[in-house]
Length: 111
Image (tube, rainbow, N blue to C red; front, side, top):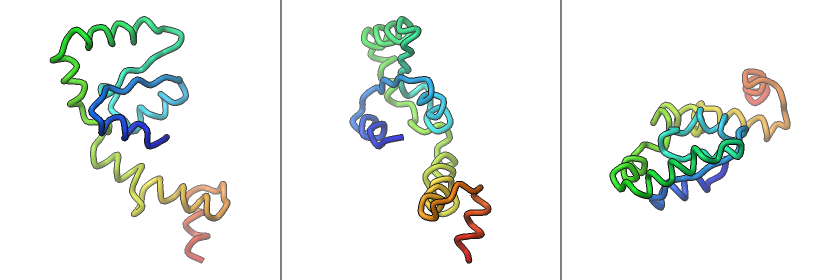
C-alpha cells in the first residue's frame, strides 16, 4: 500500500483503483464505497459508475463524504498503530529479518 491513496483522498477526489490482488487487500482496510474499482475484465461497470457520478453532483458528493477507512479507529489500531497493531509486528519482523509468526518475533525482540 502506498501513501497515494491518502494523498488523493485528502485532495477531495474520488479514487479509481484497479488490480484484483490490490483490491482484495484494500477491502480489509478501506471503505469500498469511498472509491471506484476498475476491473480490466469488466470495465463497463466502472465506466457506468463514473458517468453516473459525473451527471449526479449529489451522488458524487456522497462518495466524497464516505469515510476512507472501513472501520475507523479499529482499522487504525489494527493496521497502522505502532502500539500493538500489524504495522508494529511487520516492522519488527523486517528489522529482525524474520519470517516467523508475530508471537515468535515478539519473543525474539524481548530477549
